[in-house]
Amino acid sequence: MSSHTDIDNKNNIFEHPELTRIVGEPTTATLITLQAEIRDNAQAVQTVLGGGAHGHLGLVCTPAAYRALLPGVDAYVHPENPGPLNIVTDGLTQYQIAQAREEHREATRLFREVVGVERVLIQQIVAAIEPKYLRALRQPGTHRLQKTIPEILEHLFETYGDVTPQDLRDLTLRVETLSYPPSEPVDTIFAEIDDLAYIAEIASCPITASQKINMA
Image 1 (tube, rainbow, N blue to C red):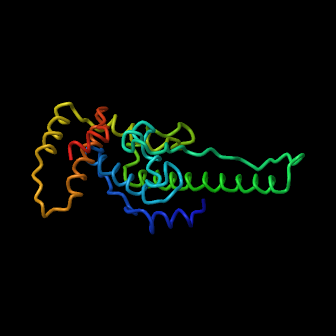
Image 2 (image 1 turned 180 degrees about the vertical axis):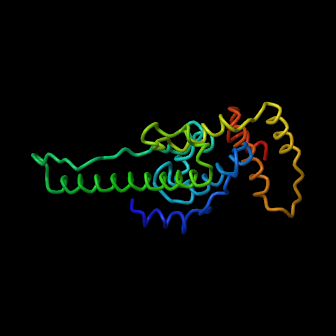
Image 3 (image 1 turned 60 degrees about the vertical axis):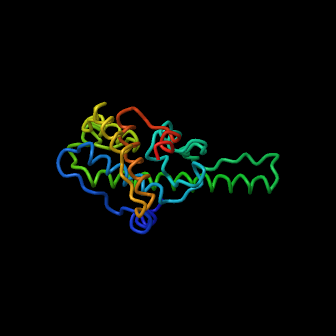
């Protein structure tokens, strides 16, 4: 995907062209904000993958987390690079050859689309966090950051995020006892529950979709 398309995604499509910068060592609270903004940006870019209704959310979630957040939705599968087109034309009709070329063209386009979105999201994370906190993820010698977004987030939360069982119980109780004035938008409730779900996922105690509905 060209840099021009990347810039269009960031400046014209992403909800957060710049992520909230984390000053100093990341904390659970700042990482939750970063994760939420990355998810917003990933979902803002349309794609046919993962059912087609949630953008590239599958780029920032593990497959298990994606299934938990969106039960019944098609899995988001990162496409592989189809490589150069290599057609053995013996025995094929002109229609079959044309079809093979079109399928290869679409597979190449989709691969570049996903890699382009993924690259810009990772660039946003790198820009939001001081370099020393990502150093452990870079390859010795080349200094390249060759990790997926879920791997980057997992490292950050495991290293700098700390959610104790008591923290999770307190947060759950706060949401369950939330006072909701009827004049407030209903999204207020779902935003609180989504935030709790993020924290529960960090604490390795994910909340299922049915639990979120029951809580609401």
